[in-house]
Length: 169
Image: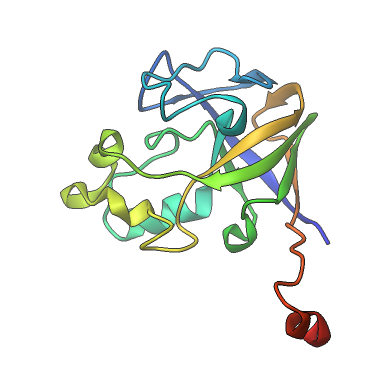
């Protein structure tokens, strides 16, 4: 089963947030070329090469009164049209020529506080608000992205957790 959507925005910065939109970018195993992180201990690396978030979640947060915008919380790719609830570790996302695998949820930090009413950046915490987090992905196939590229999501296939679950499947 796959789901489809669109690459709404590619976002880069010389370090930190906000990340600003660009029309095209090359993605390698190290991430989006032209994008840098100030804190390499917690950001970047092969398993955190690309950060992704949902345009629909951004708009919902705006409706709640948060001054968030695309790139303001550090996502490299803003995707539209996907059911963000099924974008989980193990999912694969094909964006244009690039193939990504979601590895983990991001942990929000104080650097994004300006994007939230009363600096309540925990609103993006997977722990406190499941399904509202950005995600990190590794790059399985490198390539070039352009805003507007098609997006295809292949949901994660989880092995049954127990013999009972396998009987119920």
